[in-house]
Amino acid sequence: MSSNLKATIERIKSLEAEKKSLELELESLKKMVDAKAATLEGEVGALRDEVKTLKVLVEPMEIAHKQPDLNKVA
Image (cartoon, rainbow, N blue to C red; front, side, top):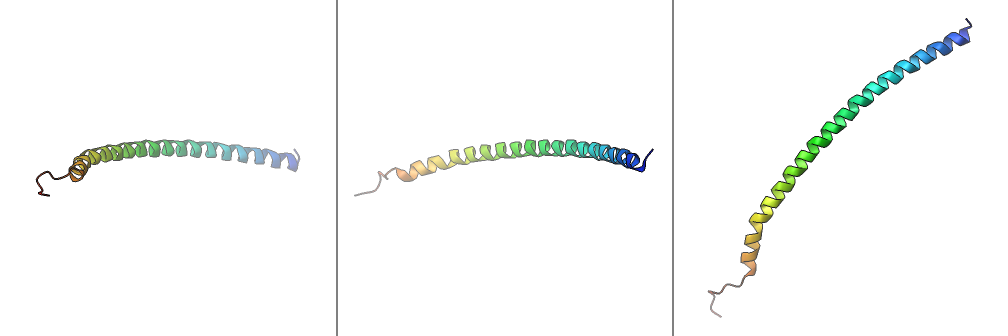
């Protein structure tokens, strides 16, 4: 076999090994991204719930401040 053919075969083997390694890394990264997205969805949901709760608590205070005090003497 010529040295050129041997070099080409070695290059192919090396590239196939690198491809497999990159595919495994890609799968791992995809799992990490999916987990991160799921975590963020949970955190965002909790923050939305907290905002709703605080709005419910604040709205009666805002209404009370807007109403005129009927006990005041003009």
